[in-house]
Amino acid sequence: MSIQLTEISKIYGAQKAVNAISFEAEKGEIVGFLGPNGAGKSTTMKILTGFIQPSEGTVLVNGIDVVSNAIEAQRKIGYLPEHNPLYVEMYVREYLQFQASLHNMAKSNIDGVIEKVGLTNEAHKKINQLSKGYRQRVGLAAAILHDPEVLILDEPTTGLDPNQLVEIRQLIKDLGKDKTVLLSTHIMQEVEAMCDRVIIINKGKIVLDKPISELKTSNEQIIKVTFDYKLEEQFIKRLPNITAYKNTIENNWVLTFNTSEDMRPVIFDFAQENGLKILGLNTENKNLESLFRELTQ
Ligand code: ADP
Image (cartoon, rainbow, N blue to C red; front, side):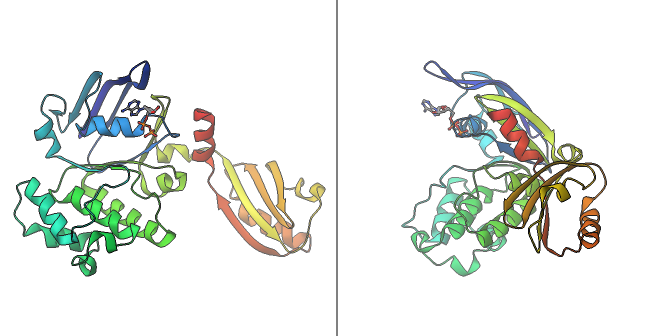
């Protein structure tokens, strides 16, 4: 196992920020770490990286005890902390050289990393001249410089625009192929798009730990559809397997079905039979989002 947390707690005064949590992750896994603000995600990540010590429990990274052997464990860990702290007055290459020197590494590796994270054209710039997306790349580059086996990324995509989001997600996915990645986020779709597994934490306790593939086994289907004119409710009700419906705005409906059958062709036939045209149709996987709300409210 690359990551093994056993019965980890962190107590601040009277508060248990993290309360006896245990989980494991192995190489090749990208694990999404979800939870509302204040749930204990950052605290867990700081403990895992040896940045702070747990009040109780053991943390092993590649079998190395992070508490008693922090330096050795940290050689195996790349960490992108929340808010990505960087020395913004430094140039990108200079900053990465500085980081490499902290790892006692030769400079020759740096250009490879710069290329890997897509910073080749920015490497000569000062960090404070870079957009948020490129700063995230610098943070990621610093985290992977020493080719760690475990990557801990605390909200790596916060504040990125949609294009940057796609690029950084792809980069993390690529990195995850031969590493163990634990990443925290508030975005459910991100977990569904990138992760193999999801862990949800609430008030310091793990309330869900499941492979993403198992979340998708529910028969609930949510379909957003736009017809070319406003339908009466009584027509919508006639759709087979429909369990809920909502007329969001004008001709737009959000329809929920409970069936293993793909309802999209059924809706097309329904539209045709009733002389309607479909102007838009999207399926939505709300499973993780509804689970999250259920488990953390
Ligand atoms: P998350 O990352 O899920 O938003 P955190 O791990 O940052 O949550 O925080 C968990 C809880 O621990 C919060 O209630 C937070 O206020 C508290 N906490 C975190 N760090 C400290 C600290 N250094 N001193 C006191 N309380 C803290």
